[in-house]
Length: 112
Length: 116
Image (cartoon, rainbow over all chains, first blue to last red; front, side, top):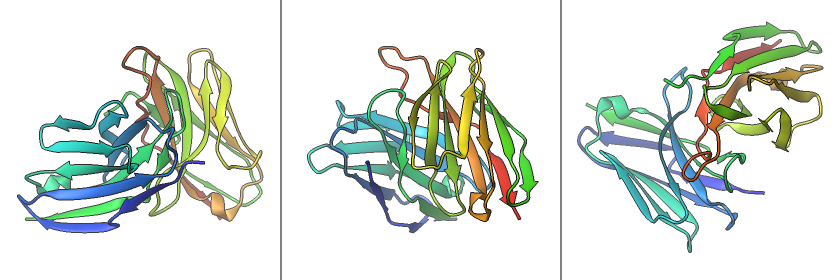
């Protein structure tokens, strides 16, 4: 089955700096890669996703890049703010209506 | 916030008991997936329901079972509860498949189950 590895497990940045979280996946058939943000005691919130026919996608301060050959994808957050502090999870799946396999999470702390 | 709701919010059960958790999917979504999230870990896939049929299952024993109803709401049932079943149980609904939809999963707030 699919295996997703996520690094780093914790990340501390100063407000205004950029943050990068990286994930690798094992199943070359995976073609959908979402990122979720989970604040303490709350539900995972879908913040951005990318499909395998696209190499990069941006939405305001966040962007995701995908390298299919290397089987890794990354989340980039620019101009970080204290409200970006949360646990971020990457995930991978094959096709629509398929199970998501999650990484182990990255705890991002943005210092004011 | 998504339109996915779950009940109850919290639940405390004793080892060996049975529990039923409920999920109402977002309007227009016909697929519901259930995940177990242990403390400090990522969600793990339990199973998925599409149009009232099980559409995939993760590495969970048969004492984890589910249902989906004609209105696309869903139940997760766990029999013979074990201490390790203590976790946050999340359901996620997905929109009907179309040219650019059907991949996304939107999570409910979860049910925190404690087994003592």
